[in-house]
Length: 367
Image (cartoon, rainbow, N blue to C red; front, side, top):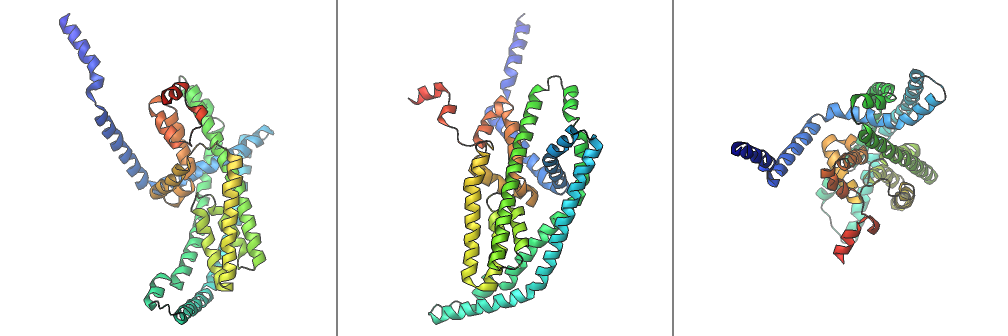
């Protein structure tokens, strides 16, 4: 009996063999291993992530077509056909615009070099002497135009590679309708998992839908205003503004750089200042008034977390990670929220709680 009670006591003490510090070290080590694996496999992982999120966007029209009486196979065919047509048109437009811009680049470089020389002479006339190597190293016209060209080439490459993603999208959509039924058959108690799955799909769909309409409005306003100002390639810059508006925080800055530079080459400081004001005004209006009004608190992520997630996922997955930083962080938040022991992580990732969200016991403690 004594031996039995002793063994029973040891069994009770077994869970406490790992101290809090040891558990933290194990979790930290696992986190580092997972992040390293994601970074090393980014080349393989990125197409699947893009396919997954394109599938989320395409799921509502697919289910709508099925509700209208179309078969699953024909609905998938229609959705994929629409995606192919849209991608082909986008690819042709980007390819033609990039070629036209490349032909103009030598002229832009020469004009920018002349403007830099005039600026240096004007500064010298005001007794502000700047060494020539400063202009060559930090205000190199060739480097500036090459940066614009590389940005456009990167966008063109992304549109070209998306054809490889569409095949994966077709297979995902063909399985989408039967996935909840498979989960119910595979799991003993699928209610909780399916509720989180449904919440994730609704949240991401809402975010992507609002972001798409806001980005489209941003691109149209930018393109029409640049056309009215006479800036070269206004439709191209509108398309760039539309695509890069999906990247939080810095996307609008990157989108503004090419048209500002081109307008400076064409017209000088005055109109380039107007273009800067255009981008500041458009992004302030849509980013600070329109998006918050329609998204409300449904996104559930703090502003700091959105910014940090942009850097974090961009470092791990590259440009695709920057584009998908908000949906990926929402996945992490929902996963952390599903378990009681990790719920505190979800709270830290979320937006600031209102006083009503604090339990009454906490209010009494504060008093």
